Amino acid sequence: MYEWLNALPKAELHLHLEGSLEPELLFRLAERNGVALPWADVDSLRRAYAFNNLQEFLDLYYQGANVLRTEQDFYDLTWAYLEKCKAQNVVHTEPFFDPQTHTDRGIPFEVALGGISAALRDGRERLGISSGLILSFLRHLSEEAAFETLAQALPYRDAFFAVGLDSSEVGHPPSKFRRVFDKARSEGLLTVAHAGEEGPPAYIWEALDLLKVSRIDHGVRAAEDPRLIERLIEEQIPLTVCPLSNIKLCVFDDMRRHNILQLLEQGVKVTVNSDDPAYFGGYVTENFVALHEGLGMTEEQARRLAQNSLDARLA
Ligand code: ADE
Ligand code: ZN
Image (tube, rainbow, N blue to C red):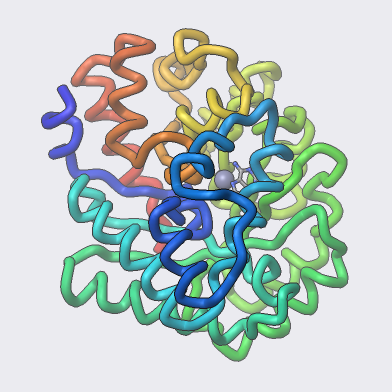
């Protein structure tokens, strides 16, 4: 089944470039940049990848991103991810990057964006992988900080097609960023947002009604609200679901209890994505395999999930 799922043409719509930083590359960049690490080696870093919730993961993820310093680092990170896409027949990708994770450490916005954009361009030309970049705001930071980030980004308006919202969900509802998203839309950008990963269904309603998102990232907690499910079906709003992530971050305690196939059969436009593959044990194919092994996903269901990902492209 691995080979068959791997060969299926797919799009990836929920991938944090910083979350594709494999421990081996992390150590190589630390050495290249003279950054001291608190882990002795790759194996002890990997052993730290055990999380009880989103915040425990985020603490490590932001620490890992500290090795990214130069344009070349961001290029290498993005290129390594694109090579994975090529190997797994991901023909289109719409990755996120978190500018504030870098600008808050003194790395200029242009350094991160330059390296990422150059790799995405080479990915199109040399690997035949189409792509569009999403600039994601960190929701644990202020509305003012998000406005500043958007202002820094607008001179490079053509380098990305949408804005998103990620980081610590609970306590930071979409409504906090309504005005920033209004401004982004007035500049012709599309919008997406993480909602209903750890946060309640009310955050999904807010993302739809206040941020006017074209897709919901995660969204699995929509299942708790039948009216919301009806709306997602009626409007065919895609959910970018990340099965291995949801298990690693204890959103579901076991893959056998994951609700993605139930949502699929109800008519919700669900897609399969890897979120932060270096931290959660696999890229898109491994997520499909986990659904086959844990939930008995059939070939016909896999085909529909892959087609949904191609249909839910925005770039
Ligand atoms: N940043 C990276 N991965 C994330 C996730 N799963 N949820 C929220 N923010 C994130
Ligand atoms: Zn995510």
